Structure formats: structure tokens, C-alpha cells
Length: 147
Length: 144
Image 1: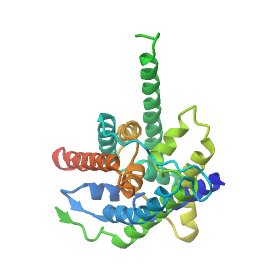
Image 2: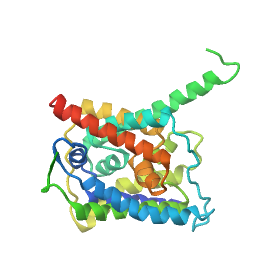
Image 3: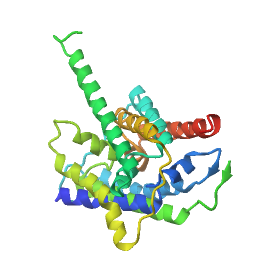
């Protein structure tokens, strides 16, 4: 059942990105270009999404299981550290170069855009690199495996 | 700053945003999860996963959205101006950055801000600020 609701949620998410115009990198970059001819549309996308999300998470916070009986897995992390800030800055630089963040890139991939495939492949490589670095560091930090 | 009123689409932006909010609401209220796209994809790359099915289904749903949209109307063609090299650099930065930063526009920007999470507020300010700065450097300083 959660597989079906995941599929449905993904579909609605993707449709929202297309309707909002956010599957189009040129429109995203027009929002990020404060010094140029600024298109504030993305702020309205965020406003609409957060308006609905605020109510949903207000309900979610008061429950321990979802309406399908799944464990409610809300993030518990509260610390603000260098990983969070530098990671987000790196993401923002990449976002500013191409105008793609992960969701819209997947939508453009579904549109059959070759350039979206290049971006998604590189993004997956970046995520894979993160896993490799973290595994190496975990291995190097564990006792008995110095160097 | 000059407003580009011809490109500004407040109503479709708001409507699309509400749909995104509904998707995030479905995901948390039915599946008990945060609809953070980078986190969902990232979990697919972790061998210890064990929850591959719902992650793959969520990704498949997003990729299939243009097909669903095309039942009603032709989708608006995206305009991707970045060259191949820039796309590779951007993709790598987005991939590694969203994993170290524990989220992207959906996880921190939509879900995190909806939860009033201070961590997500810092992350969103960081990637938005970096996005504004990057576009400023590329378009107005380097003049590319």
C-alpha cells in the first residue's frame, strides 16, 4: 500500500512542478537572477506548498503513526553544523549553475530531455561519492584500521 | 532589480505550489515520511536500504508526471541553457551538496519550513543565498 501511495505522491509532486513552471530551468534561473529581469514566481510556489504543508505537518506532529499505520518518521536532528551549511551552499551553487534541483531534473528526465539525463547522472555520481567518502571515513575512524 | 511582469505567473505558481504541498501532505500523513527528493534518491544508493520499493515508486511517480500531464495538455517544453560541462559540474555539486546538507528544495525548503525547523531554515537560506550569488557571478560579473 505504501508503494502505491508513494507512486501517487510522486506523481502529484511532479505535476505540481510542471504546473508551477519549476520543471523549466530558465524560469528557476529567472527567479535566482535578482539583479536581472526578476521573475518572483518561485516565491509563490514555495508559499502555496508551505501553506498546505504547514497544516499537514501540524497534524502529523500529533500522531505517532500515519493514517496507514506506518511509523511517523519525522527528522529528529536539531544541530546546525558545518556539514549542513557547506552542503547546502554547494547545492545552491550547483542549482545556480544549471537551474535544476533534484525534483525538476527528474521531471525533465521524464520529458525525454537529454540534458536532464546528463544532470541526473552527475547528481547520482555526486550522491554516490558522498556514500564512498562517508564509508571511507567511517572505516578510517574505527579502531584497528588506522591510516 | 526590475520585475519581469511578462514572465511572472503568480496563479499557476501558487496552484503548482499547492499541488506540491498536497504531495508532501500525502507522503507524511499516509507514509509517515518527509517528501525530500534528494533523501529518497540517496537512500536508493545505500546498500543497507531495505526500503527500495517505496523509494523507487516515488521517483517513478515524479518521472512519470509529464506523461500524466500529457493526458490533459502538451507539457511546456523546458529551456535548458547550461552546456554539457556545466550540467556535469552542477549535477555533482547538487548530488554531494544535498547529501551533506541532508536535503534540497523539497526536504528543507517545503517540508522543513512547513515544520518550522530551524535547521531547515538555515539550510534554505544557505542554498538560496548561494543560488542568488552564483547566478549574479555568472550573469553579471562573468557576463556569460
